[in-house]
Image 1 (cartoon, rainbow, N blue to C red):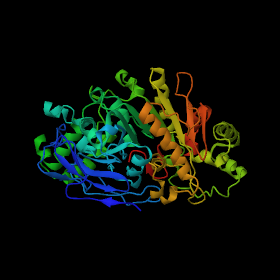
Image 2 (tube, one colour):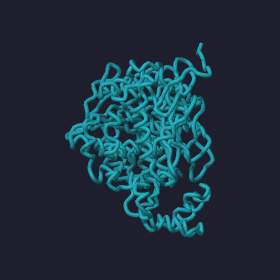
Image 3 (cartoon, rainbow, N blue to C red):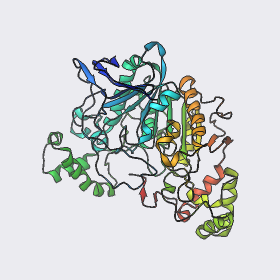
Image 4 (tube, rainbow, N blue to C red):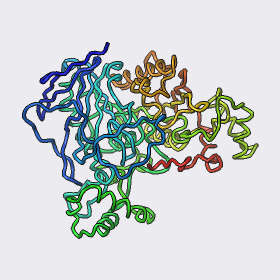
Length: 518
């Protein structure tokens, strides 16, 4: 039976800012909403104010305000949690099974998804770090930080005080990593063994951190999950002055400092009103990091930053990503291989279908050709390109593909975020992903590889087949299915066909009503 305990002064930890009190549950000491920074709107973060007495860390902290809200439509795939929004959102959560500094457990810092505009550290049920802390014997940290126009709108044209405002969200994350360096030993963690990891926008933020010299030394391993996207670069170029001035005109203010005082909902309304026109003109609309020296830019444009190459990296994506957010009316449990080929032929013609199917069978010999219609390349291609480039530059990087199938509407291939509960070892929180006799075994193996990577910088262990790092010549890929296999360049030929026939196969940037820029 799980044990819960929480006293007025226990469990308590002394941080640089003051004492914090969390609670103990089911083998974990849990602390929520600990402030790691503070910031004035549009300005760089600073150290948090110190406090007297005991800070109550039993409650989650505020999450960053959002620009828009949509009706939930994919709750079987993503179980969302929403929380109280406030600009004072620089806080983090900690899970640890032991608070003894002598333990020196590896530290896993989780950066949430949602692009650079949405999400929070608790948005998905699977972000909970309790199970990973237990199974991987590590300290888990998850982080909230400023998003959208609060974190990534460039005001640098308006004075030195706003010099790096276009990267404030990233500066928040760097400040969180400084907090980890300065405080995590008191939670049983080793500040010299920190792994940063993120999925989707969180993966994009890991890429950005690797491209920022200011973050050097604050982490020692990195994991990018579905974080590289072909439809855009994780950066913007040029001034955002036109966007800021359009917002000021809309709000009828003449001094940029007035934007610091208005309620956030007015700023969001102004931005949402003026942004489409500014975007159509090809100008900077913010909402992702700006290349300005502090952030050196997308590696595919400027190469991986030399100072980051010593950091071991694991990088990968899911079989379908956004392509299997719906089933297209196809029941994969009953469709024959001949019927699958017919559907592909209908899109690209019989001759092309056979060429594509032959290449697909080399990559996935046991799959029905119908899965060609659900095989992602928008994430897979740039993921492979980032891995190969890093290896060519001398970095050590391991590549994976998550390709587990799930029992929804005749069978659903792995969608965007499907791998998170397996890595975090909490598939039981996701009914669709809790496959009896299957999910826990896969999760055990993934978590074992993660634990090895956190400790040694190499994911190889007894739980996975021999997994060589990517080289300049080839990309060995760990393919995670019911069983695991490692195949060099397994989908190289198929990828070429996917790109060539993307329009016919309906695998472009906008898929089934799901915009990858969301």
